[in-house]
Image 1 (cartoon, rainbow, N blue to C red):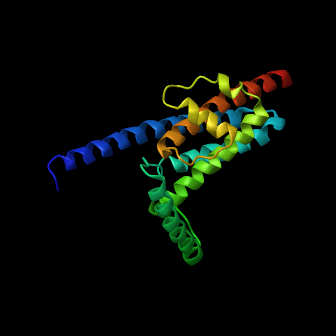
Image 2: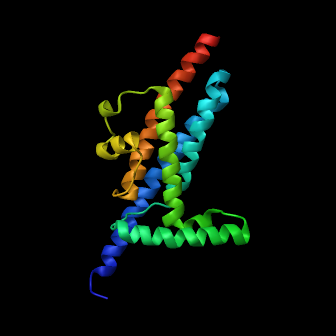
Image 3: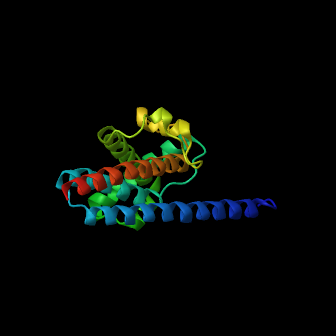
Length: 191
């Protein structure tokens, strides 16, 4: 091993751990805020949207631990293919998937949870009528081009998975603000 290689790996690991801790905290904060909203809301007509939002939050809760920097789409595709076979074998053989199995097959399972989040984001975005996507100001962590790409067609190929996660989390927070405002106004009218 060349001198200095270990240090750069350590820095990369530390950088990833710092990213993970920050993003996990944001997802947990979003989960708690959603829990408060879900339990306090009296308006039954908004429950369906709130339940769909729960699917988005759950996908992000799982994905945050499974995404990592991706340097090559070809390598990611090859690893995802291998991990998909491993995942399916575990599912068929053991009929159970928990965190250790997700982590062991993260190149496939991480992509699954991210894609599920994108699907739910586009679905909720169209129902809640938030601002025009081109006018959305990102928070500095989410790349505006990726945000627009997710909302337009959801095809995530060619982007780094952590950047995709950052964009998905930003959009989830934006959707939650709209959902929260809409639900709160609805509850006030009902009283």
